[in-house]
Figure 1: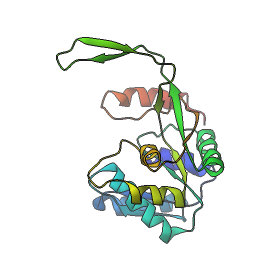
Figure 2 (figure 1 turned 180 degrees about the horizontal axis):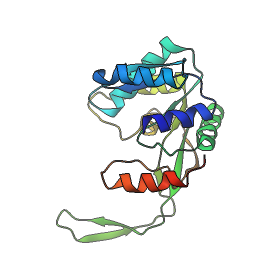
Figure 3 (figure 1 turned 30 degrees about the vertical axis):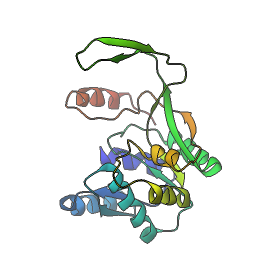
Length: 197
């Protein structure tokens, strides 16, 4: 999945970055980066929570290169297209913060702990967030400095929102799914057969 993800970013013209991973995977990932010709990339160790890993990646970026705009992406979303990467980068550069979103097409219900429907949520203004999420580097660094230590954000856009930053949305992609369960693997393998990014 990581190799597919890195290839998408390489095809989008991204020339430097940081892969955040467990320490025991560093050697293997460094070899992958070298085999792909990604000389501007390095590996760093993450934290116990996603947002701590993001912060580690942001700090490591300062060692790699100077960046005006950064993209934060989950490698588990390995079918992201190069076009979406470029669209998020452009929106982040223009507006300061951006993320891809999808319209909610299913009816949304609130449900009690006992499993009974409590109500129906109007979905017109609801969107499903994806990655990559893009930011001006100075703005997301400052947003993370303001984030309360005792709270765990669901994504980086929430950190930006908390700091009062407007976050621009761009149209996401249905196939930009996050592979999280074993049953997602057959879908991923089938999608690869028709993949053209």
